[in-house]
Length: 74
Image (cartoon, rainbow, N blue to C red; front, top):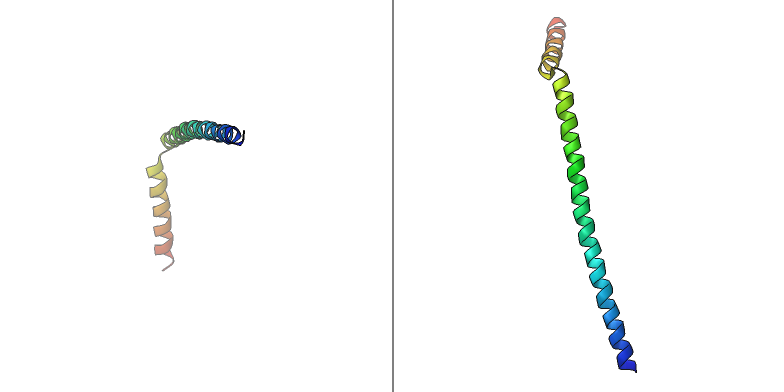
């Protein structure tokens, strides 16, 4: 009787381990899909934001402002 109980316990532990491994594998795939979706949304948002204003002109104006103030104070 003890041998049967041990065998059933080992069978149960094996099945539980297999189910847990499946759940973890599926979960990681879902996490990768979620991360990819978030990254895609961020890239689209950055492209949209960058195209809505002239970044080069803003940087040029900031550099000009700093150099003229530095040159005028000397």
